[in-house]
Length: 69
Image 1: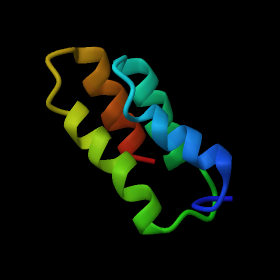
Image 2: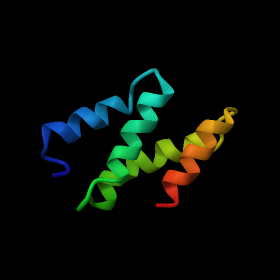
Image 3: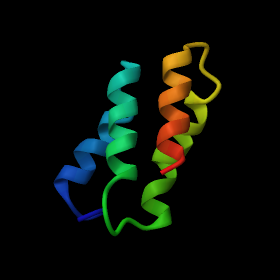
Image 4: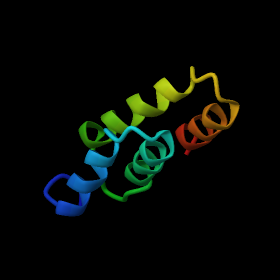
């Protein structure tokens, strides 16, 4: 389903949203997609790594939990 799907494009565009929760949910959705390549996962992992240094504890916790999957 990954790279050539319009749904994947929509989720990838959601990672550029100004709201942190929308960005987190989009990154989490990409991480949970089956049959994705490392190239397709890279933007989501990068966003989650950035969230690990967030001043908000809930965002850090969510990012670490998602990265552990």
